[in-house]
Length: 66
Image 1 (cartoon, rainbow, N blue to C red):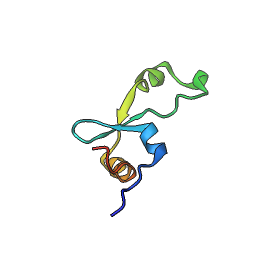
Image 2 (image 1 turned 45 degrees about the horizontal axis):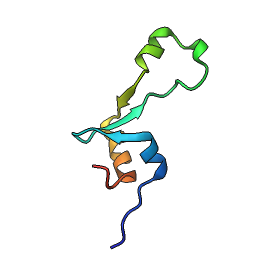
Image 3 (image 1 turned 60 degrees about the horizontal axis):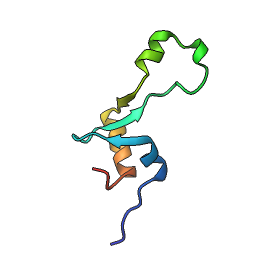
Image 4 (image 1 turned 135 degrees about the horizontal axis):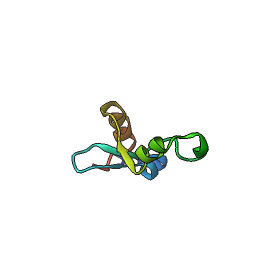
């Protein structure tokens, strides 16, 4: 059986916690920051945990990153 390939885009954007949840950067911080509130910018710093449904999709893209 051949090895499955990891999606290159996924390995650059997501990582997994020890319990198997997917971590990703928060969206909406690339440009147009003038119109964003200070609260939004503060809450969107760092990374966030994806929902269970999204984690299931990401795990298909990264079969060996567990």
